[in-house]
Image 1: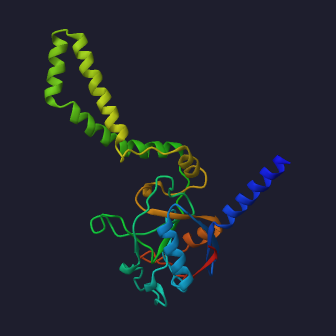
Image 2 (image 1 turned 90 degrees about the vertical axis):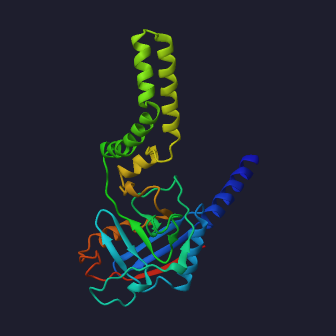
Image 3 (image 1 turned 120 degrees about the vertical axis):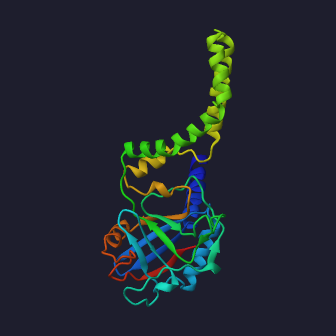
Length: 269
């Protein structure tokens, strides 16, 4: 009896949790996609739902399409835009404080918010008046290793130079010549410890998690963007639509020659 009650409580809790998940559908003339919105990015989730319910994104275009990278749309300047016109301007009245979280990364199907560059937007505020969806590509383990090395080696070298400055090098050289082994080893060990501590605490160090590696080497994605933009949802169906749109031929501004019109519906909130 107790087991039955536990099962019922668990079932009800699970059902409630599932039913409370925010789901939106992005429909186009090339197919539809469904997205789950994240609860740990509430500012973006709520702002996106509010604009979707207002019909803000409806009749806008996927105006920026880059194969193996992303598809971007939602900008009001794309509504009824004539062929060849440069579009995609954001709305300064529709900004949201960043919610960049390390547990969300740019795997294929990630729903993300664009933003202005750091030099004019140091707080990384998002422009929720538009959005982009990651297409990316599948990476090898070796490619991910190379990305880590490219980012981390300069960081480590800078820290090493900080602790192994000319004065310290001269001191170690002198101790070695004088055969003061214990003193030499103590200083060297302290330096090594300090270097490792500072390196491990540096927020710029890149280390792909097991989850990231699995995603990037199977479904694919675009890891270069990790930590730079807010990801507020992920695709749960309609990946083939992402593939179709990203494969479209585009002009010099990355706008598809074939207009891809958008309609966004909130399925559950």
